[in-house]
Amino acid sequence: MTNYKILDISYKKLSYRRACVFGSIYVGEEICNSIKNGLIEKGDPIVLAEIAGINAIKNTSNFVILSHPINIENAFLHISVDYVNYNVFVYCFVFAHSKTGVEIEAMVGTFAALLTIYDLTKKINPFSHINNVSLIFKDGGESPIG
Image 1 (cartoon, rainbow, N blue to C red):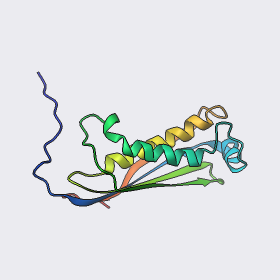
Image 2 (cartoon, rainbow, N blue to C red):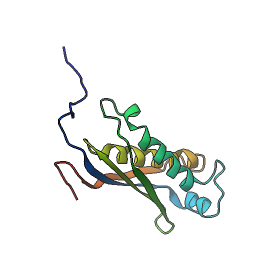
Image 3 (cartoon, one colour):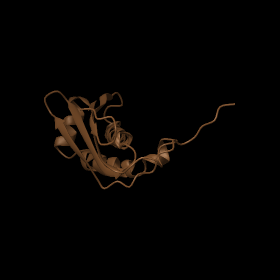
């Protein structure tokens, strides 16, 4: 029998935690032009991806089992379109005073934004692909990276 449990963080002290995650989606020329000209039928994928990312950050513990709910103090996404190479880049930043890190929240926010872009543009090209999702930095707590 295997036991699963949420990890005990009751002994940890609160510390200021930050994380940034990067991801991209290759969408192709037609989608880039459609984004540029406001022709995406369901709405602006950049604005909607930012909203989806923030909503996902706030609800991470509902998606990632055994993760702790965290009071997020600040979160934002920076999304840009590369009209030359036909990529959309997502940077997701999360901040909190917490006993545990916020990198999972930043990853969930990044993926939610990328999946939203895919969903809103799949009618034009269902073969867009998500690339390079990775932790850029995290700090606070015991294991800084970056």
